[in-house]
Every structure is written in C-alpha cells, then in structure tokens.
Length: 140
Image (cartoon, rainbow, N blue to C red; front, side):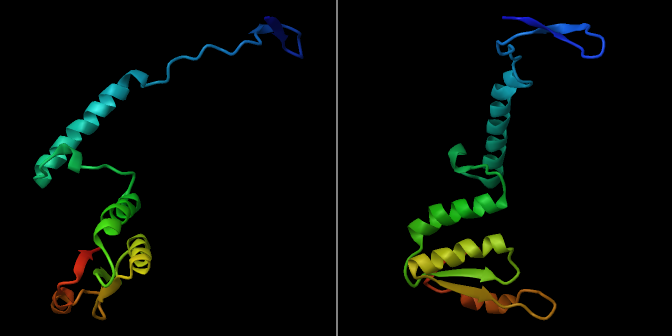
C-alpha cells in the first residue's frame, strides 16, 4: 500500500513510496545479447580461417591466458600425457604456465624438461632442440 515519504525539514511530500518492488527496466543492452553472440561467432569464424582450423567448434574463447593454459592442461594434458612422458618448459615462463604442468607431471608421473637460457636470458636453441625425443608430448 503506497504512502507518502516526507522530507524531515519541511514535511513536504517527496513522492509515493510503495511496499511493492519497483518495476525494473530491461538492462541496458539486453536486446544486444543476440548481437553479441553473433559478434563472437563472427570472430570465431575469422579465427578459424586465420588458423586454418577445420571446424568453428575448434576455436574456444576464454577469459584469459591463465584460464586457457588450465583448460589445455586439464583437457589435453590429462588425456594424452602419461607416466614417463615429457613436457618441455622454459625458466622464462610466467608462473601460471609452470604450475599447472608441474601439477600434471606429479599427478601422471611425467617429467618436466627445462630449456636452458644464457646469461642474457636468451633460450639456447641448440640445447632446446636436443630436449625433444620420443617421450616429448607437450611444449608449454
């Protein structure tokens, strides 16, 4: 039931106040959800073409790099990396690209191989090439 709200100083009416929840206006952009989905799908097709992916569903957008790394580790890594397989990393990686692979290696009994760097922080490419063998399953 509506009642009048009054300003304390002059007791002037401020307007109707109701116990009923206010009607909500549609959120700004509500009609554009469909448009945003269409934009994502258009972007997916562009990326598919750029990468020469066979299907649109091969292109996955995530919230960021860390999310993507974790998705790859949990999806690909858990399925295709096993005991004594090897994962190649560098010491130049961000923490978020080391920890998931360390956890997977521990869980699966795989080995982490690290690409050496020189004093200037440059990868030693000839040494890097030597790390590859029949047990190499992933380079992160």
